[in-house]
Image (tube, one colour):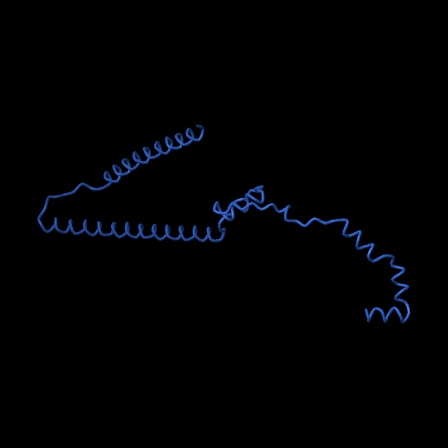
Length: 164
């Protein structure tokens, strides 16, 4: 509601400023008209034709000035728009901050594969179980290391290694 009140206040101020500008424009026009000398329409036809030619020349001059001013404004507007585009290019697109999402493996697969594949993968079930008994048997099979070293010591042990 506060935003709406601020907006209506800004609109009200803008409306008052426009009204003031309109009154100033009317006053400025009245002052300008008061400065002009009264038209003297008395005289012969050639004098009136001369006066009309001078008025036409002054109108042409004012139109040229107006056209020049409009062209300057449009050129400035184009330059402003070009500069705005360059600023946007330099700044680049702002990337939104990513939110951390916690998702289970099943939900991730479902999101990736879509709803067509409802394959549930239990990753823990697929893991190999390490059996401690197997390790103990391997230690017993090797036996005491001192016996192996003693058997392989000397030429007989080396021959056994290559033969068997």
